[in-house]
Amino acid sequence: MRDVINYTTAHKASKYSLILPGKHSAFELFPSINEKIVALKSASWDEVGNYLGLGVILLLFVLFLRGIHNKIYLKINLFKRLINENLFATLFSATLLLLFAMAIPFRFGMTSLVPAPLAQLVGLGRFAWPFYFVVSVMTPVCVERYVGSFGKNLAIAGSLLILTEGVAQHLSLSQYIAKEENILVLDGDNRILPEAIVAENFQAIIPLPFYHKYGKKNEFEGSLASEKISMQLSYETGLPLMSAILSRPSSAEANHILSVFSEKTSENLLNNINSQDILVVYTGEKLQWKEQRFLNKCLLLTTQNNVSFYKLGAADL
Image 1: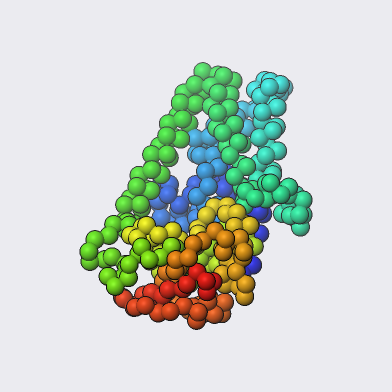
Image 2: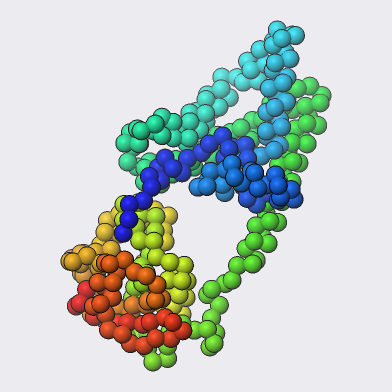
């Protein structure tokens, strides 16, 4: 078990997440540029959908130049012409949410001020989405209405640019996903469970190294091999996993499950299992000392393809 980073402020929006695309974008056609973009993006949020898009950025830039021109030469405040009372309230609210998404002021040593219900959302960066939607909708409308006859064509061009970026991202992601192996396609040659073991004799699976991710205070990292093998085994046998990779798991439930690695298992967990054995699958990788202590209680059944299968009586938990 390890202490994890403070996801509340680590997963935040930034100027880069707003103005730079993610990994799968039209900029993949220009590797040197795309490499620099990816390097600038926050590692935690390079795929988050609050990127405004080239179309909106272009239109905002035009509005900015138009506003300066009107203010200097025509003495007209373009902002007052563009934004009525209702639009101002909408944009102002979205901007406040954007600052919140950027973890301002919480990022400056004031994490404890984040309300508990919001901290449960793991990251504040998602609160940039309202700003994304508000600006994406308002900008083409304002350009078309207030930049003159050129504005309509510019708004159309900006919309087409947004569509082009979207298509490029979908095409890139489709190629990326197609390359991934479907680990749940099993046949007689790659089944995980040895023939000598009867799945019906067990009630659940505990993989080792154990993984229980995104639980903030309580987290086991596990390994890729452990995740893959245990998920295949669960799919093959129909047995539930006691491990988890969840977006926002229950802290109380996590405490109960992880108590199997402590000196005393949670009474809540013991009251919610039956008398059948637990199937423990070990991929042979390095274990934490608590995991090793747990494995020492288990009885080895067999080993197949460098994966060892153990059983643990429910009473021995």
